[in-house]
Structures are given as C-alpha cells and as structure tokens.
Amino acid sequence: MMRRQIRFRIVLAAVAAAALCRLPAAAQSAASPSNAEAKVARRDGSHDFDPLVGTWKYHLKRLLNPLTGSTKWVELDGTGVCVKVWESGANLDKFTMDGSSGHLEGLTLRLYRPESHQWTLYWANRKDGVLVEPQIGEFKDGRGEFYAQDTLNGKSILIRFVWTNMAMVPHFEQAFSQDGGKTWEVNWITDQTRIADAPAAAR
Image 1 (cartoon, rainbow, N blue to C red):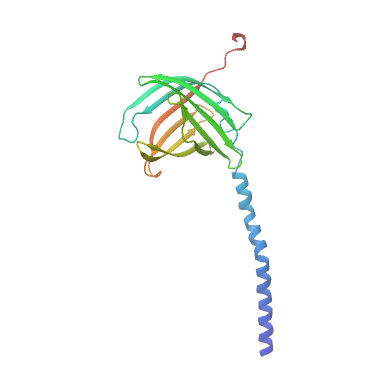
Image 2 (cartoon, rainbow, N blue to C red; image 1 turned 30 degrees about the vertical axis):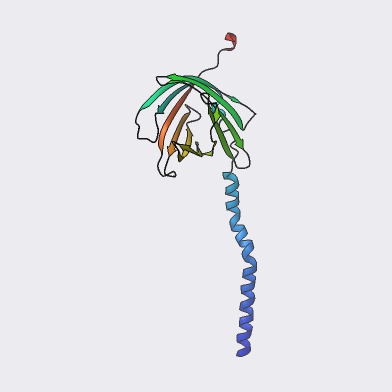
C-alpha cells in the first residue's frame, strides 16, 4: 500500500511538472491577440492633418480673460492657408483675422512622431513672436486631442486642443484647466470653410 501511494505521488508530481512546463507557451499564446491588437491600434497617423491643406475662411469666437469667471466673448473673421512641409507628417498653417477686439495673426507648425504615433503642435502669435509650449497628442475615432502644461497669471494650468469634423468643416477648440484636468473652460472656438481653388484659366 505504501509503495502504491509513493508511485501515485510520483506520477502526480510528474503531471504537475509537465503542466508547469507548458504554462509559458500557453501564456504566450494567450497574449498573442493582445499584441496583435496593440499593433493595429498603433496606426500610422502621419496624414491626420492632410484635410487641412488648402485655403480657408476662418470664424473665431474667443473668450476674454479666461479662468477669471469672464463670460465676454469676441468674434473675428479672416482667411488662412495650410501647406504640406513634407509629403506627410508635417504641415504649416497661418491665418489673419480681424474683429472688434483687434487684429490677430497666427501660425501653427505640426510635426508627426513616427515612434510614438503622436503629433506635436507648435503655435505662435505674430504679436509676440514666441513659440509656446507644444501640444502633444493624437487622433482616435476622428477626434484629435492634444495637451500641454503652461502658466497663466502666475498659475500652472493644462491646455487642451481638440480637433473634430476634419473632413467637412474643421472644428477646433482650445480649453484651459486649473484643477489638473478635472474641469475645462473652453476659450477659443474656430470653424473653417474651404475656399475653392481658382479656375486654371483665371491664374
């Protein structure tokens, strides 16, 4: 009886050891779909901003004195153009607008990072000629979100850019947060309408 128990324990131990040996292969097999999904998720976004290439009419609504409780908005209208810098992964746009609050000229340089599959957006206003802290982010399901940290009135804030409706009437919003992203106040809204290219005979 004792010998049978010993033999049974030896067989049981052998079965357990064999199962343990198979575990890494099974785990690797189970992880394969996730790896495949991750590769699919990391798509090439280098053409995300291609729909902006061309000439546009701009309509801007801008909140004065953001994060102060202000509810006073001003509106500006103007035109701008976006051009490719390289075949893909970089473009530059600039615009000029005027309204009751004055004159505004700005430009944005956008660069795509293939390794991270993210865009870096650099904004500058002609009034001060300074490139502000770049916004970094990406598009998911047709919505582009880009974030940066900066200061406003001596306080640290988060800045969010959001791009939507790229293929039709591109819509852009800028928002600030002073509570780490828990709440956001939109302070800049832009809608763009494409200006048709001039007929070849008119050029």
